[in-house]
Image (spheres, rainbow, N blue to C red):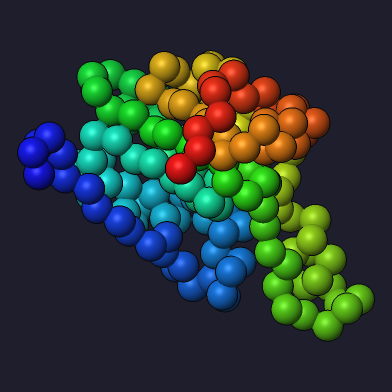
Length: 154
């Protein structure tokens, strides 16, 4: 390309999760995905942009301070397009124990705290959080995450 930029797209790995519950990225799921893919991602990319489903950025947010803070030019951009705490509930019969566990497990308080730190800059200057529209900014602030970057429309 004329700009000297290479762009890749990767689907988010399910790593054994059923259908859309792969986007319910709790701490254990983030660690598993990082252990299986993190070193390759670190070696392959200078900028990682997550969009549409913001919870997948947790994989990077929980590891950025250990791996990227000292590397110049490495960036993580979280583009919030569909409620930053978007999640799925597994298809289980109403009233079963697994339904209650799934509903209460994600997003957990640590998730909200991590994303608030990402938005307020305490994870470092290499992390940016942007919203697709003004409602995403409003919704995030209602949940304790204050997005300070301007809205970025496609």
